[in-house]
Image 1: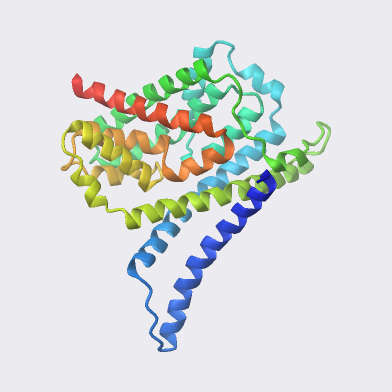
Image 2: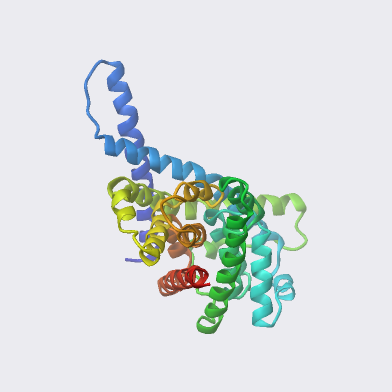
Length: 334
């Protein structure tokens, strides 16, 4: 199946998912008004609620992401980026992680920014450093973690230090095994032309907005599908069965990482969910939940697969899983 056919199928699928869920919920309300009994399973209504909550939570960050990506595409040249990135691999990873830590982004929107940066010449390992630290240790996330755990600086500090260290390790390992940019060829990219340097400021702003719109609709279908699958799993996979499996620090850590992947929470809000498990799991397991989720989750996986080669995405997920588990396990042994 060629790429354009796949793209149109995904567009149609995303539209059908939203249309079907909206139709059944609205249809039920209309039937109630007419006094006609129409039964919709409660699980479907729960799926609808979770789906829309994930989607509504993510869309503002995606909009911010596409605007930043559009700005980079039009206003930032490849030559300028090459001057900014250090030649030394370790220095490049460190710089990207530090910039990411200062960048208040959600994991949904930052994928778009990283795609544009890598397309402009940023090494893939530097892009990964930015991708991982942006949603994980930015000031808003750290402050929300501090508040969620009752103004306790310990968990916020652990999340920042261990998360940053894990991101550094992952990015450095990526630099050893992946040399090319690992981007998929996007169909619409062939039609994008950067305005000439002498174009007026308003023309370039217009080009930036057009590019942002292309980015939004290109990634929107993956966000919709990812949100739907995350909602489906949350609805039909018993969370209680997962929690019952978490006996011992190894299994509890794996369970909390799995829960973080399935729930697909926004990193600005996940600390409040994590804090609710304080009396059920050890600190290391809660920390794994707080670090793993912003790095990779079910919703974000769909977006990564749409941008990067499948082999790279699978390798990145495995690497993130092993690194996060090892880092939090090391704390347990101390």
